[in-house]
Length: 150
Image 1 (spheres, rainbow, N blue to C red):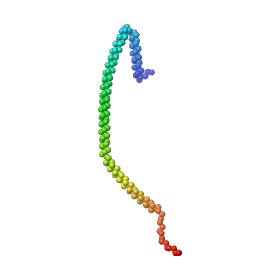
Image 2: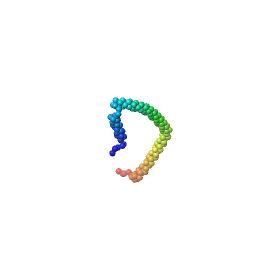
Image 3: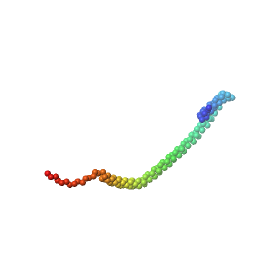
Image 4: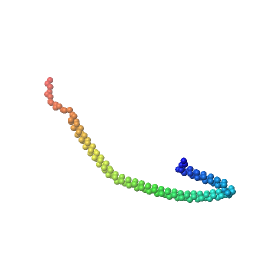
């Protein structure tokens, strides 16, 4: 089964058919060989000129299109650069504006933590003292003794 998705195969078949047709046309042509050569040379010159004109006009169009595209890319790059600069400046300003508030908050948190640690240390000391009192062996009262006689 022929696969029609391959465009190059169709193009190659078309060109091959054209070449075979041209060769057969030359072989069975009613003109002489000299007339055929002159005719072919004239047509070749004509097609060469048309091809050259086509190439030059399309090359000029491509150059214009390329230059337009380059200008658009440069403009887009400049706009993007400006946007990045603007956002960067805005971000720096916001960070600069928020820095004092953040420092103040950190300072408050630090003071609160210091106060909390001091309170916890005091409570821990009280708990340790209570535990020490409860776990200490009972103290027996010491009675005064009479001096021994010798």
